[in-house]
Amino acid sequence: MRVYNTLSRQMEPVVPIEGRRVRLYTCGPTVYNAAHIGNFRTYVFEDLLRRYLKYSGFEVTQVMNLTDVDDKTIRGSRQAGVSLDAYTAPFKRMFFEDLKLLNIEPAEHYPAATDHIAEVITLIERLMARGLAYTSDDGSVYFSIARFPGYGKLGHIDMAGLRAGARVAQDEYEKENVADFALWKAWDADDGDVAWDSPWGRGRPGWHVECSAMSMRYLGESFDIHTGGVDNIFPHHDDEIAQSEGATGKPFVKTWMHSAHLIVDGKKMSKSLGNFHTLRDVMARGYNGREVRYVLLAAHYRQSLNFTFEAVEAARSSLARIDAFMDRLKQAPAAGSSLPDWALQAETVFKTSLDEDLNISEALAGIFEMVHAGNRDLDAGRIVWSASQVLALLARFDTVLGVLTPPALAIPEAVQVMLTARAAARAAKQWTESDRLRDAMQAAGWDVRDTPEGQKLTKR
RNA sequence: GGCGCGAUGGCCGAGUGGCUAGGCAGCGGUCUGCAAAACCGUUUACACCGGUUCAAUUCCGGUUCGUGCCUCCA
Image 1 (spheres, rainbow, N blue to C red):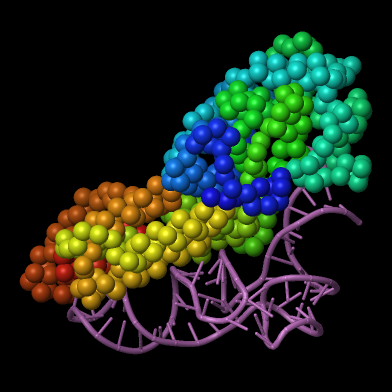
Image 2 (cartoon, rainbow, N blue to C red; image 1 turned 120 degrees about the vertical axis):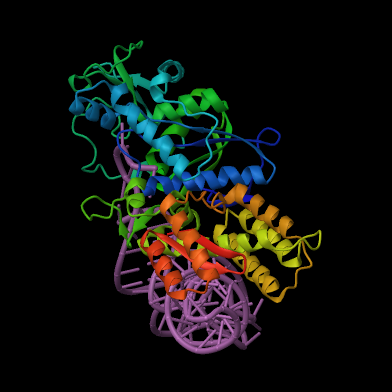
């Protein structure tokens, strides 16, 4: 398996530092609101990576952090008039619910920043001891980028060429260099009661430092893969490299992987354009997590993805096609004991495609070609292969894709009654009554079609 | 200004120096009481201008348009 490493800007083979275990750190959410579908694009990409590593025979230890203390969470809790914990708790809960809706496999660890203040302080002390950090008069601690050679290597930022721009806050005059970043922020009135004791006085951690502290705690000082959205390359991930390598003197991360952004209707998602969607917004329009997952999954992770409701509709139809094929396989007579050639080919395509930087589009194309070939055989009654083995192969694909298993159908009582009545009407060849019941079920959101095995229901 | 990415048929989205990606939608047919599903067939491509080459959607240069980052945004 090869992946694109942002650090080297090249494709590189995945070779774990230790044995077959891949240690993976994935930047998680800041829990100050409901995550939007753009966030989930990244989490779905990370889930694909995790699942495919396992499919390829690696073991995975994944960490996803929860940022539960920063400017936004503090501001939110103050506005709501509740404690920081009380403010972030529901967003944490909602985040895990959303992961479940999208069938994202749980990581091994979900450390929260507020539970790791001790680790943060220890890390800052190491940086102080090595002369890479300094305190300001108000009791904040900054990282000195001038004392860390190679700062900006991930984002390929040439610090000499940076414009001293409008986005540098006015009140940060205490820093030696405008690009120095806070490791520890001294308490001020806006922080309310959010503060921890430290050797430098009361305060709270800077943003970047939590990721270094928590990744080292759970994955060690050097680990295999670190991921996030492209916007995190600089400064966040470059700052992590500076802090971590500055403190340990060891390489921090071997491979950096970044997902491109999602756009909506061809434009950047923003609240002012009215194209800003949370997962719940999309589901409120009648789509399910599986359909959304398919849309987010189906495009290559380094390509920006255009999210439209038309695409969700297309995802629904595509999935229905696969569902119908799997249904047919379940009904197929027991015949041969091995896989047909077209299934073996799909397996090869699946592997060679995903091996090459997770080329999901090609892998899915391989599956659709398999559906096509399988249907043709089924129509022709040319079944000299084992349907159950084909189903088992699809199930193995699904350990990676997580979209092939349709949600269980809970048929409402009223629909069940109509279904039974319609079966009777059909037996008596009362077509008018049969059609009336079909329309009624359709109005209730259920499509019914007639097959040699009887009626089949599909939820719309 | 610096460092990047992209432009493929009605829509989404792979890929390749010569050989049908795939999905959705459309059209014709088979099947069906009628449908649906499925299958078969089928229409619409590689932004523009040059160059390299026997051959360019693919490589190189330029143009246009879009887009990301450049100090706490996945």
